[in-house]
Image (cartoon, rainbow, N blue to C red):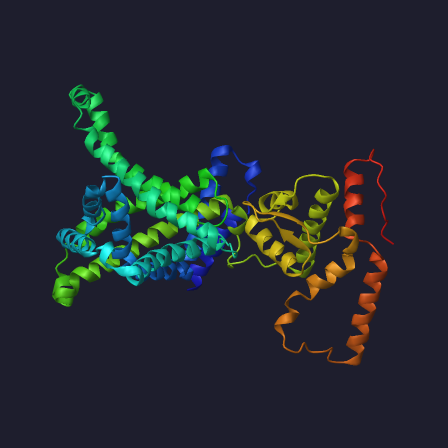
Length: 456
């Protein structure tokens, strides 16, 4: 155990003792890759990925048939429903002969699901099962991206409807177009010409990997309730796609073909193999999401905690900086800022800034707009918001969790707290957020004629 701990410390020193700006570009990229891998391995060892994958695997088993039934109904309207079975066979290929049996059973269940005879209650339960699965996926991705505010219900409906209609249509259409491409006479003639034939055959073998990569990238960018950039999403998707193809080969050759499962579980071997494969699939998808997150948010790579732990001083500094920036934009007639813009201004991770903005919202200091993305403005006139009151609200933020906050344990401590409060209030005086905003504007633009209230 001591040796493992020493190795971890040595690896941390190797990765975090160097300044990327002083390295060659290829060395900086290699260092960034090492930091991402260390952060993902830390989450994997801690068990976060396994818990998330197990939860989604269980929900998938309950919702798979309703999901396929809804997708089948949508695809049937566009005439591409016949491709759902070949795609299921491809997804179940690592299960060997068991995959064919599972696919046949699923298709039978879907065919027997007649939406017309379900009735309103049955149709509602069918849609609820599908929406529950998508909601669980969104909640998992929001947890990975440190997003604590889910989408409004109106936005969830439109997003889920897109996933259930446009997503399957585009995916199965792409698969169908790929499968029929080789039947075109012009393409067949090109295949006979070398090396074009070799290149096209190689491209055809890479198409399943490209399709699964695009599907993963779409999920990473579309599902979380935050803005995920294209490059981090593709980085996680390419890694997950490669793991998907590799794990499918390993599972097909070393697990599904093993006779030990049949000897131990008998007739239950097929559903157990299916459950194992579903869990592996979710583990790969979530692993890619973690890679995408750490690629986009490098500030979270070094911390071993789920949340960045802020000191009292740093929390006050960031919250006061956010309030001052929002007030400054208010008085300079600049458009209200989004959470991402505020994070870039104060130099803090967007996920952390989202949490701090929620704290300001709960204290009724700022409000967010109803649009997407949300923008933040002062809850009332900054002339009415004193800096001293803001700092009081920050310091007393979690005291509401106490049913009866304990008083100072000794009169001497009570007097000390009173002196500290008096000294701070004396230093800040009547300074408001409006005064602070004017001082910031005047410092950034000395030629501007603005009235300021100096700090006493």
